[in-house]
Length: 129
Image 1 (cartoon, rainbow, N blue to C red):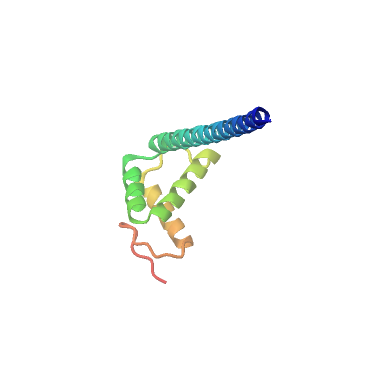
Image 2 (cartoon, one colour):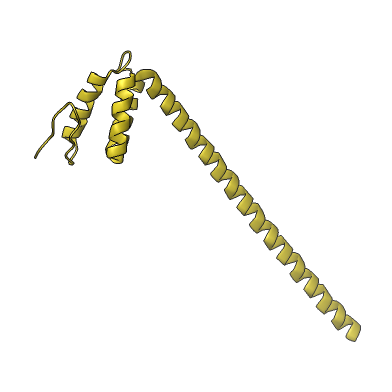
């Protein structure tokens, strides 16, 4: 009887050990899959950012790029909005050729008039409410 009981206890312990090993393996596999997915998403974001930068570099004059960078540093949210508008204009084909600094000023003025915040964009005067 002792041998049977000992065998049953050993069998149950072995099963528990096997289940614990399975559980740990499953956790490791899930973690690995999540890491791979995160890495893939990061790579996609980086590639999209590179493409965006390439398009803007190609389509903006040096002066227009400087002006956009200045806006992005001073007002990051507004700078992002301007960048998105520029990309939309470029992708839709509404912009032909390079965007110069004067065109950028006009675009910034238009967008700042649509925004609730006041922006003083050098060369355009300040906007008041």
